[in-house]
Image (cartoon, rainbow, N blue to C red; front, side, top):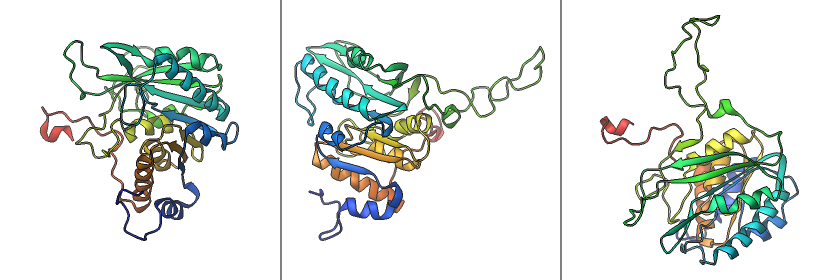
Length: 298
């Protein structure tokens, strides 16, 4: 099934993408993630980054009792622990499980799962976005979280690669031995643990048929901060391949799997577009649209 994305009798997207991307060709499959991970070597991944289903009954999941959902996640986290390099990181992006209007923060529920495997929480990153469903009986949700876990106390963290412009770039010390010198880092400031990226809605340049799609720029920041060029990045709930795209954009090797063939087909189509130089993604660092500014501030 190719969803009509390729002309009849054309080469399959996987073959085309691998031919064009050569050494950085991704490894993607329509397969259960536990089975896919069985074929990967111990300690072979520098970064595992994903957004698993939230158990809220989306088209690609079957809603289950929360206890059963946690048991399934335990199995996936255990398999990921085997794959992760000693200096590697896991970034688990989640929202809320909702049952009859009551919310359960999934990162809170999953915290002991990661701790049971010896992982250490470095940041609970808040991803804020401004658009979504409007609630009538509670405040509308406008953030999700990314829990950044490391396997050890010695881990890759490239802060300079993800610095953002300082609010006051020319601010200087006004007294003391450094008087007159810049008070901030000339490369920019630490982006902090609250990130503002648009979520992928209907007017987003990256929008596909997936209802809960990762924005590439969000994963790019994680890839740049937590891996080095040539490292392997894996997404066990790949969807339409945004994590793999983010890895390939920066010279990493992307791995991913999903049980929905339609999503995997689109992931290969996006990889092919990247190889052609025609893939459209929202650029890192682009300001969030502000209707009060000329041209939205863009």
